[in-house]
Length: 394
Ligand code: APR
Ligand code: PHB
Image (cartoon, rainbow, N blue to C red; front, top):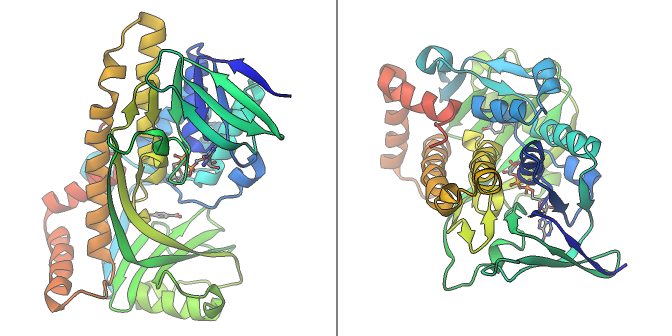
């Protein structure tokens, strides 16, 4: 039935950003309502990357959603960069004292959903025509349709956690919103296969035929990617063609350990760098993919979203608990400083590790020189490692 619901924070989007924010607010006694245009099974069905920074693990621990992560996740102390068959291990543990955790983001989403449902969280799934309204007033609201009825959520604050294609960013006036974008001239073809990973750590490879990545979900399930034309027909990528291409690009040593098999997930994703400024407008805040997108090369999508949510939940909790609006007033400036650093790292690694159609011999030599510099300089390796394990929150 049509109606109006009141809450403290209305969260648009029930992906990792929205779910984690709801959990962190609930732990501080702050009420929220979650809206999503999909339902839980659709949201949990999205295949995403699988490397968690230590800060992300800490946030999930703080949210009480890290038990299965610690049971099933794989701690990694390093990863490899490969260039035309030459391989160099970045020892992130030795260089930074930190590790990363390999654990599917799909699993993070499932764990957060379980926490929120167990707590009786109010969700509205399969919503439509979402319109954040009266953002500059002290009583903003979100209008939407749900089960054919017009609904209104009246709230103190709106959190736009509705991803790149969401409605929240669109609610910021065009003369206020600034966007910055780089679309990469290629895509990633990813597969999942129930075979042991080719190596116990991730391998990012640049080969003259294109980029490749060897990752995993467990010791018996592997996740692989090869650079492809973003307009490729998936039907033109048989498993045999994929395995042949992956083996060439990873190089002979890795290929010798490659266990191939029938893929059970195969998809092509575009790559882009994107940032929207500001990440606050009136009493609406943006977090996660609603405000920024990174190419998956640095595995930063979820980790950047979690960092946004940690800063946003700090701001909202300070408001409700201490009537302190300092972190609310500085949220956009603080979070964007870190967003741009992570965008730079993801862009730099993508630029170094892929074959660009427009690249001349000069750019290809620059890519190889970057690899050689990292291989020979502990300082250069440490710079990569510090970004990979996750920059400080501020
Ligand atoms: N109204 C309501 N919900 C919407 C709307 C809308 N207009 N548009 C999108 N959504 C929902 C989507 O259905 C999705 O469930 O918002 C959610 C956004 O979730 P994500 O796209 O996963 O974005 P985010 O939660 O910020 O996650 C950030 O985590 O999933 C990984 O790597 C992925 O970069 C991503 C990161
Ligand atoms: C993945 O495991 O899906 C993955 C890992 C690292 C990346 C991107 C994707 O940089």
